[in-house]
Length: 257
Image (cartoon, rainbow, N blue to C red):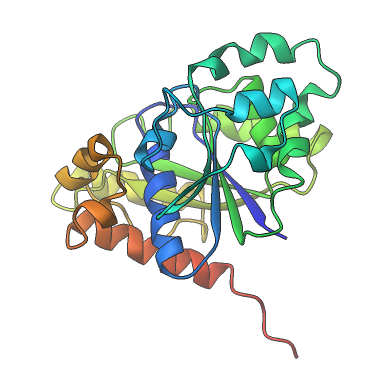
């Protein structure tokens, strides 16, 4: 059964979608079977994996609200499979409010699609509202991208508080997969200081592989490709390849005694 990982941080612009797209592609290249659920109404993960978000139908909205079979919505790409999103997802929260067990709608939707996959990633919107709450209830673990910028830790206390509430009342088994440092520039004292601060807050839970500031990472989405397909020799592609290997090592089954 697939492990479900929500990529979450309520701050925007921290590299959630970049990490979702490029980690998926890097894991797929290592032989893992990966499904991405784009749960952000901006649908940038959908387009970043080469799926046209303006024509993607059915989408995760139809799965959640209309009860469409999720298997019928999955799009196959060379970089991993994707449950696409489009702008209709923006109105889903209002429709979900009156539904029974509204916090578990995504968990229910994904329950039947995990069998062929090793990992299911959920790309969350940059806010702590009902869509994100659904992702937290559906996930086994959380992957938190943190940008190496001033105010990097601002808002993380809110996220951690929300996670504690979810664990206490809705998803007791939810755990932290790890923290990924993004937009790292080793030439600046600020990046170094932020990295140390994050490691102090999350001892033993910060990935050694850091994601640098890289022009190719910024350019790749406009071509509907992960960076590994756009420029495999770029620093961004190398960084996500290293992160994928580290991620796989963390998730390797324990040898039987």
